[in-house]
Image (cartoon, rainbow, N blue to C red; front, side, top):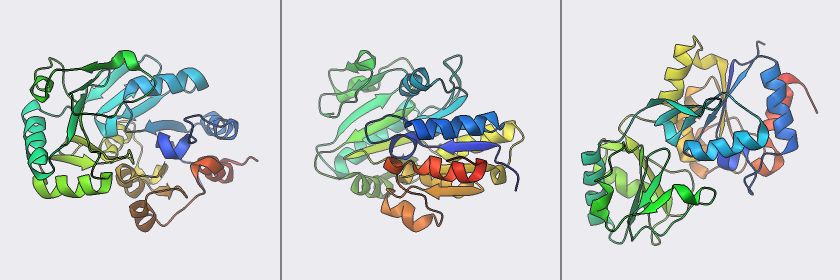
Amino acid sequence: MPLPRVIATDLDGTLLRRDGTLSTRTLRALRTATDAGTEVVFVTARPPRFVDALTTATGLAGTAVCSNGALVYDLATRTVATSRSLPVPVARDVATALSAAAPGLGFAVETGHHFLYEPAYGLRFTGAPEAERAVASLADLWLIDVPIVQLLVHSTRFDADMLLALATQAMDGAAQFTHSGGRGLLEISAAGVTKATTLSALCDSRGITAAEVIAFGDMPNDLTILNWAGTGYAMGNAHPAVLSAVPRRTVSNEEDGVAAVLEQVYGGD
């Protein structure tokens, strides 16, 4: 069978181990694939600054689909190639509706290079504290002068699945709602922006069909690429919704599940 032209892989919970590192085995498998002419595309909820750290540590390069599809990022030049932002009025309306449906939520916005949060948002991310900035109130989030790529919602009361259900019920169609497993964390993009819509457009621009793509993921935000790709694998540690929807399985990220499949495709240990 012909080798895939693209490997599309999520990062956290999929390619990376629990401690955020890439194992020697997985890195070797990825390099074998790229040496064979296959392009590796990271498809992640993470913004570019986190992908930069990974490429610096591993030497991998190419393209990343970041922020759940809102950004296409060139790893070599560290520049955003395309961006699909969430309109401020939509972000404000979604925040208002969700606050009414579930009081006590905290909100933050991601711009791709910076992360701004209001006082009620209690979640912090490690790795790039210089990119984080507090604002005085929720209203101040809507005054930033750069596009919003994601609205983030955090709750200490509701888990991510419950937040997703509440958001879908309150504002279905107004925006794209999903989550990547963060505790009490909901991720919101512009309507129609998913990992799959952006990856599909990227592949189409290069003359690559879905049948030529192999994809890996573990969380609800990965379902679109796992269903779109010609070959999609759910990780052994995947969310129940992913395991029930994706028939192909590999072992967990802690067991180098991506490498296990790629070794079968390309040969290896």
